[in-house]
Figure 1 (cartoon, rainbow, N blue to C red):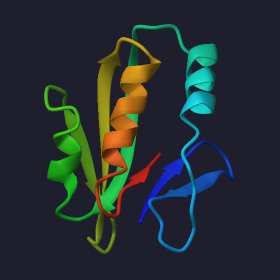
Figure 2 (figure 1 turned 90 degrees about the horizontal axis):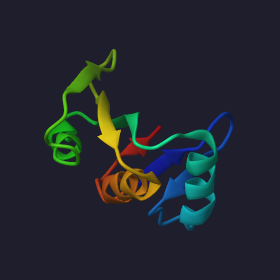
Figure 3 (figure 1 turned 30 degrees about the vertical axis):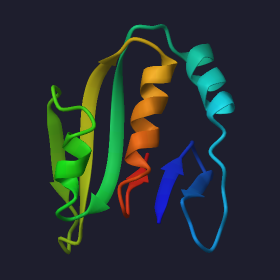
Length: 106
């Protein structure tokens, strides 16, 4: 199951078999454009099961990724800063990330 985080108290499941949630691309795009001047240095944060960080790195291969392992070593937090030309580029990264098994997008 994959998750995306939209802010305080608004975690939404993606690709869940128990819960169906359709990502509202347009609403998120409007929020990004209202709050961001493009191009911008955008910080992506993901949590994935340990061993899946390579898949996260492949989303933005020309950018540095910072990793932090969870206390029990079961999960890895990945942070990537990347220059994004527009909101569609950001949304594309999140949509590709949602296909990674077990990913949580923050």
